[in-house]
Length: 288
Image (tube, rainbow, N blue to C red):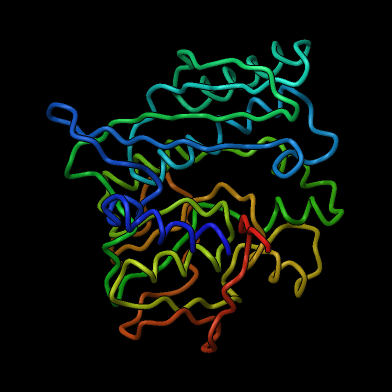
């Protein structure tokens, strides 16, 4: 059983439409508030050699990336820390604060507890005008598919390409780009941290159309042999880019470096170079 299978179970308990996007959407006066929460554990989510400052940075980055995917302006972040050793706390909190500052958010509080394994839970809030909110649902046949930067860099670092360690350990949430794309009127958008292939299938699940990618157009990790780089770009997790669809005439969008990688098609299928794309990437799984 993987996490997406468990989402279907949760959808029998709460409105399944609330599970379709990277954030919950909550009315907030004339605006909408978006809210996301993420849990990270040391053994599964923090690569070996990571500093405590980088741990704090990553815990915030994962949540602000979700906020960005909705076209929202980042607002506040809360960080709960299940702490294994008290001497780690200061650098974790400084890293979390620094990520907030870099992304235009504010670290405003959280919770603290003792825990055998370092565990961080971040909650991010943002706001957006209703007309600029972007959901995963909304792609239309004829739209182009695009991403905001290179794919596969984090996974490249994990398999030994050390010149990509910074992209792995200090991911940059695309908050500025998310806001700009929302105001520009893109039709659908999501964060791509679980890998391109899985993200395309996530879009497929909530749209009545399909997605066709040309792998020759993928922005690949530098310094990696082309065939391996293409595999990493399709299936590697840990990239905090945005995946979006938009009418062709909308691009280029000033202020956003977008790479067109394919198009939205009428058939309900995910294709790469005309063939069905394997549904795999970064998934939490339970065995037994």
